[in-house]
Length: 324
Image (tube, rainbow, N blue to C red; front, top):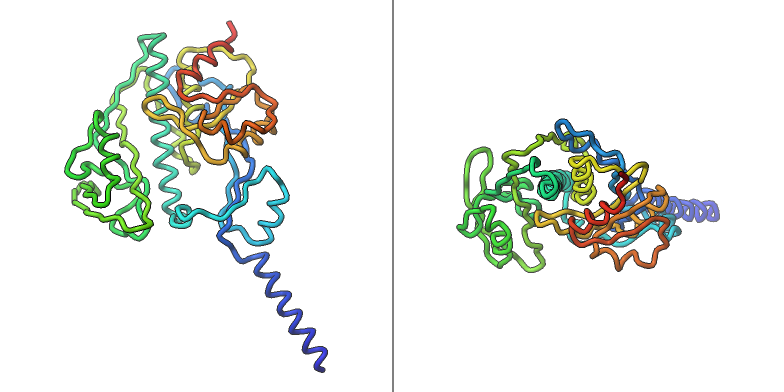
């Protein structure tokens, strides 16, 4: 009887630890190689046939993986398994989705502005005008329930946001005490905040309003659930070559990198996994932010590879690949 009892106790502990390994989430996350996705349907330009040559690169991401998942995923050296950063753990799933949509909208708008302005140098019938008179709150410490991701900020420390000063206004918010004038549901109110030790600063995006363009455009990509800014460079290139009707034959052109209003190409996360994704997808040409180059320099690549620091550089490289 005693022996049977000991066996049951041992089995109970075994089942308990197996359940933890299989089902209990941890503070570890994983980034894995993913897929390339055509960008031609995200931004539609009136009277312009979108190029079908361009692709963005997406990774697969899973937070709070179980212990058994961690063991299995670490067996593949292409995966990046690690402990979740404090910043990641502080963001709810709802806020994470909202943040992805905000950064995606900014990415679409900056892609359009860069592509139209660069294409205008070749064809002056192409034009775009835009304004900035507020900021969008992208991130705030999670304990601040009074603030919401997506709040519109019209003033920071009493200074109104304009197209000319928005970068300085955003920088001015990175001090111990900050005062925000917030417009929500057509009402304005002021919120004063003092950062506590360990806090991350507020993160804002400029709230861009494109007031006119020729040709006109629509943004059907805003209606899907995918988010994030990492497709900015490839969206910009796709718009540019489509506006100018450049021909690349059957070339499969992919890449990753954010795009800013000044044309600079910003780094992204998961660069290593994106290179592995491009290898698997058998692309012909791949663009990446110069700031990500050091991370991926040692990976074998089966494509032409171009790290770039700005949009103009990528355009110059592409124009050498056109087919008459």
